Amino acid sequence: MHSQQQQPPNDQLATAETNAPSALRQKGHSAINRVDHKNQPRSSSGQKRRFGAAGILNVLLTNVVLQCLLATSVVTVTIATLISQVVNACLGYTIYGKLVFRAKGLRHHQPLLRYLILMTALWLLNAGGIEAGKALGMNRNLAAAALIPCLAIVSFTIQKYMIFRQ
Image (tube, rainbow, N blue to C red; front, side, top):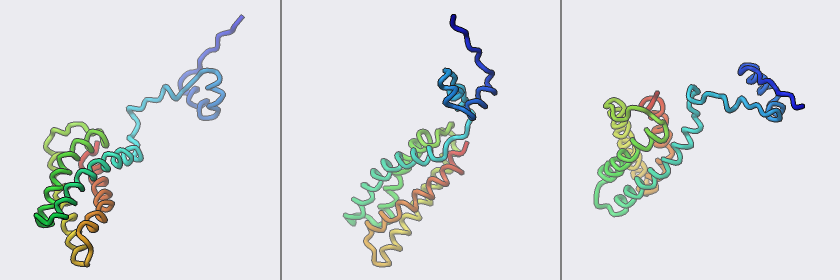
């Protein structure tokens, strides 16, 4: 005759899971499946990975535009960075807002306005940084590429804490 095992209450199950997870798995119990992920804070490292992945795509497209404009000398550095920043802003607001930070209410004016202010600040930093590099004898394209990590860190931090905060 096979005896039925009685399942312990959730609090005992969670305690047992912490103390002896392999014993519970052997008995067929799993507190892991009972965890409510909706009420837990979003993982910062997960956001960083998503920001990095989305950022690679956005940076590649934005920098193709910027590098082509800088290489041809058809427009000034200020106009080249402005055009690339417009491309970046159009892609970025949706990509970062929805995929990275999973923000709600992206159609509201306040996050959009904050994002546009950030994009303006990043554009000015980018243009100023390229001009500073050029004044120091650096190639404009190399200066633009060197600014990418710095601007990415500033962008991530401001988007996380000021634009798409939940």
